[in-house]
Every structure is written in structure tokens, then in C-alpha cells.
Length: 256
Image (cartoon, rainbow, N blue to C red):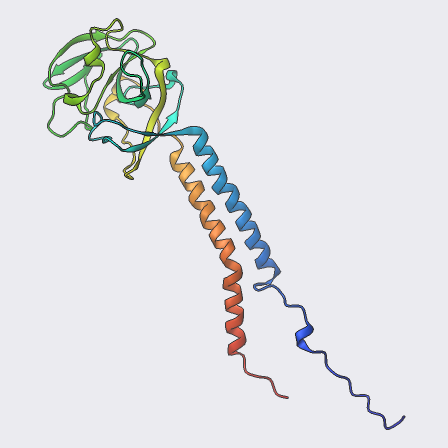
């Protein structure tokens, strides 16, 4: 018994449980990043779906601001929120049976006339309209002063010589005006082609407040941030495994 060997056999490494690459803290942070990214990504899409509606503009009456066939995003608004200079989507049975896109140039109580040296006049003020095609007048022909009834809007297309707008309906009972209630949405951006947000119509600021841009930029930022977090969190595990494998290959073999 005294000469009996007491040598112990070391356990095989193959039986040891492999730790997750990158460590537990890294794995937890990766999971949190993916979860947060999903919240931001899906939340941004949900917010955008509630606030915005997509439309395809059927005609070129809003050229050069919006061309025929362009895809736009329009913010759902109440007609009472419409301001001068807004590009709105509306539907009026006396105009057409389909949604139309025009620019609001006058609201209830305003007087609108054309033209003074080729420029539109609202409430006696000459309006600067830089969104019109370069070198073109506000209208191809003058029209008499129109007083817009309360609760109604006077709308024109930016392509004034090729737009069936309020000037084409001056002999109607409503004098070419459209009810605020007919407005469904306000165009915020052209998304296809990706021309971006519409330029704010500063020429109407002297007559009162103009509309502020909708939350589209915030919605897009949330979606992008969410996508980055999801991709970054999902990529952490494979990257950590490759880094661990690379370190293992570089370590020198131990002595026996």
C-alpha cells in the first residue's frame, strides 16, 4: 500500500462548458441593444403609419414642386389646421371624384387677386412665390378680386398655366373655393423620387403664421436608430466569436 501511486488524472478540457463569446456582460448588452432597436424601429413605423398617408400625384399641376407620378407623404390633419402656403390633399365633388393636390393661397376672410406685375396679391400684399417655375407669372391671365368665405380655402397649382384649380371654378356657387372639411392631409415630403421635405412657403409669413413641418424627420430618425441597434446587437456575437478564435490561434502552445 505504501508504494502505491497516488497520481491523479487531470480532467479533459473537452468536458468543460464553453462560455459565451464576448462574456456575459457583452451578451446582455447585445440583447438590450436588439430589444431597444426593435422598439424604436417598430415604434417609428407605427407612428409614421398613424400620422402619414402616402399618395401618388396623378397630374403635373404642382410642377416643379411635385411632378406627375411622384409619391408623397401627407400628414393627416384637421381642416382647421390648414394655413396659407400649405400643399394639401383634398376631395371636392364639384372638382373631381378623386383626391387632388393643390396649394392653399388664401383662407376664410382673405381677399385674393391677380396680378400685380405678374404676382399674386392676398389682402393687398404682393406674395413672393419662389416655388413657381422660374420666370413664369403667378397667373396667365388676371382674375377679379375674390373674397374667400369663412371656413373655405382658395387653392392654386404651382404650374399655373396648366392647373385646374380655383381659377377654373370662379363661376361655381362657391366662387372656386373649397371647404376646409374637404382637406384630408398636408403634404410634408416627396419620397419617390427622394426629393425630401417641401420648402416652407415663407412668402405668406407677412399675413400670419405658416405651418411647421410634421414629425417625419423624427420618425425617420427613430427607424434608422432602431435598425442600427438591431444590426449592431445581432452582429456582436459573431464578431466576439471571431475575435476569440483569432486570439486562440495566436497564443503559443503550453509546455508539457
